[in-house]
Length: 289
Image 1 (cartoon, rainbow, N blue to C red):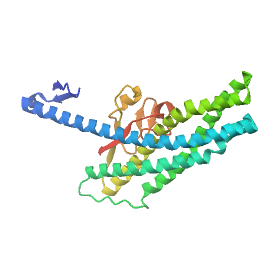
Image 2: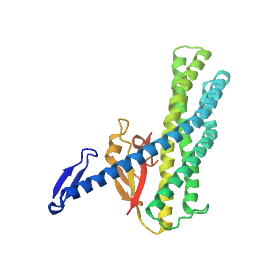
Image 3: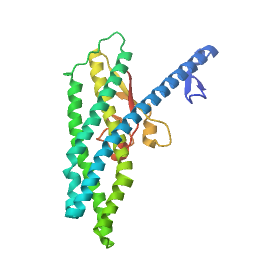
């Protein structure tokens, strides 16, 4: 076996010695480069699409936090700390509605993307998706359940950060107005600009990959062929080591990916450890089994 390394892609090409003619080596390198460039183009397009939805989602989530901030501040000044600490949970239905809206729009977009990808892998086969198709029902159920789960964690985290902020002011002997200004700082400097984006990036990635996975599986069943799914990581200095290691991992649609110590059905799978899913930017592509 003859081994050749392509400098552009960093990949190694293996050919039987009797086939390692200059022409066949050049053809093999050309194929590797073409595949490499195509994957890079897909990565860039997916990253742009995810970033667009992240900013839209962050704006929607930030609006909910701004309304919550005003409510919590007024409640604290008027009714005291314990009443203020109950408000994030009381207002959770509003955040839940915002998350449902984000999930639904992202899921619709990435379902279309996934079905187009399946069509490209199955030319000439019919893929007609109707409102009664199983993946549409699956997505509606996932959206409801995921939003309901997520808002509990969001409200709990906000309450604990709010509690720590209020306690710090009270222990320092501050007036009600001084503590209220601490609440302002918590929301205006941390929760609204930063936490909104963390939540948005996490939830957009989760909903995009879930919808893509569900639609692709349904499309493949309709077309009558087997698919594999591929984990794709954005290769930059923000990518987790575990996710960079998982880049290019190929498994059957029904099987999980091995990512660090976790088994994930798709990037952002809520079943995974938070360290593996928070702000994950990885995404799925597909290939014939």
